[in-house]
Length: 108
Image (cartoon, rainbow, N blue to C red; front, side):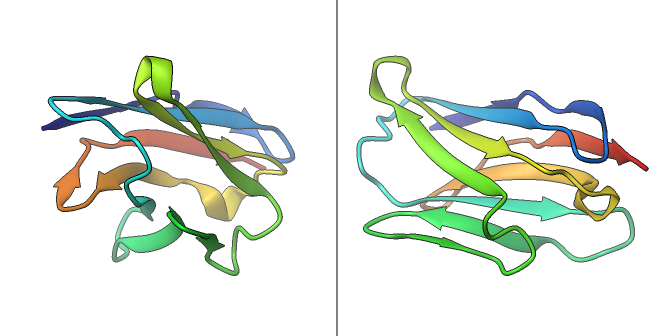
């Protein structure tokens, strides 16, 4: 199983980005899928889980959403109203498999 995250970049505060996580060697289906992030010098933190229900860290609740495209075997993290504190490398995780991460930088 391999996961590939993409879509990171530089955005101004208040802007939006959509991250993609595409799987090979498995099918996302309805398997629980998670997003994490890690800022420089900080521990990796959980962002959200899309499973039977969707749950979010308080820091992103109401701003981030998850969607899936089964035809592309991809999961998307839509990030709106971005803040400088959202700056981090974002990782997707499917069961025990991690993607390599994609960097999101939010400028003030």
